[in-house]
Image (cartoon, one colour):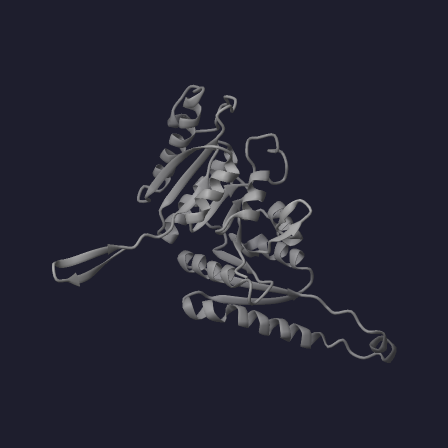
Length: 310
């Protein structure tokens, strides 16, 4: 996007660059599925796409999962690493011919490479599983660590065989805190506007325990009052972004129950779930919280974790 600015020597063109959407690849089927998803999303958001492949110097040779038209035969040594990044770049260009695509081969571990790329990115996209020793776990260790530590939103695409087109034309937003989730709310509105789809904004609430006196006197629980308080908090959380993106149709959903269960249920008919990254410290270091861990492990749709702005 460019704008013209008049000056004494003529028209000065100021180029305004948008941050890229960064996707990590390692040649596995999961990473190629994430790549295809990232190509579609970058095109919708009118963002450049940056592909990152990280590899260690002493990494053993292996055979990447790539389509035959990307090469042929089994490369070895340094050729393997070059093959992966070139095949991914070619795949992205075929899938998104009008997209600006760059690729970078980084010597080092995948977590560090992605975290560094995320310092200057609109968002990071990763597959749910890699090709290392932990590939058979529900979610790969790289995705978990990156999601816990990245400075930008992290989108985990769980299934490599997900269709590249949206199935439900729906984005789901989980709101836990009206103030700290502001970045996640804006991110959800932005992607919904780019997709031209509706946004389901969900906030869960818990029924407070009854006091001994209330039980003794048989007083009503005032469930409507607690539900209304949650609806007011949700309206407050959405107000600013709703005004900024008036074209987005918003469905407000207030539901009693654990946030994990409520979001898992509503995610069954959505193309992307957006939540705030509620990061904290545990005995093992940075922790995403139990709700986000459950969502990352069990959701079938892509999940975007957006760092909270405290």
